[in-house]
Length: 175
Image 1 (cartoon, rainbow, N blue to C red):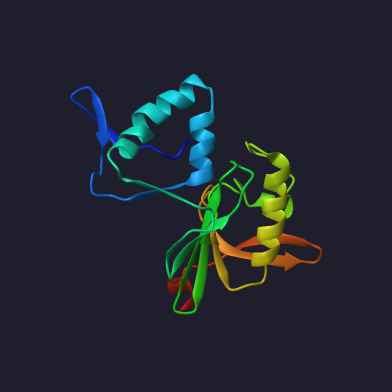
Image 2 (cartoon, rainbow, N blue to C red):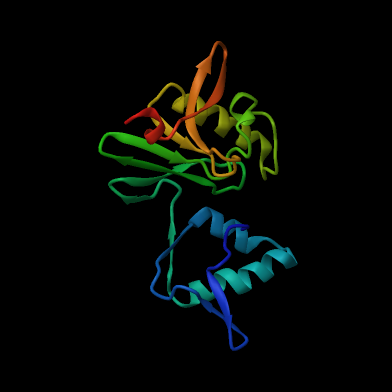
């Protein structure tokens, strides 16, 4: 609900889609959760940033494991919000994942129980533990959406724990 800016713009006192030819994919469970909240701020945000694109017929509600293309798919990563997803990108034998809000700081890779604004802290901790362990020591570029720069690197095992190792840009590695 906090990543919907620029969906709409105020035009002649009315909120209208900023990109009227766009196709907006919104997670079904996330949408159902957001629209059910009895919160004035939430309802204001829905009214100015979401309802106009829904009413314009631009929204497609998708499941948490939706495949956008052969190269891009969603990975369920619940906890921060009930329908939170990460984005897996696979092309030409290489993989990268955009984490979204499963972790706000690289230290949460080792300390998965560190809670930073999660709707369901227990589910978020389980998600972090499972996904970071799955991605550890794999050739997957992990892009921490909320990490301070540099945001991309690898999850590596370091004895009994996991850690984030920043990956140098290819131009710095001589590739």
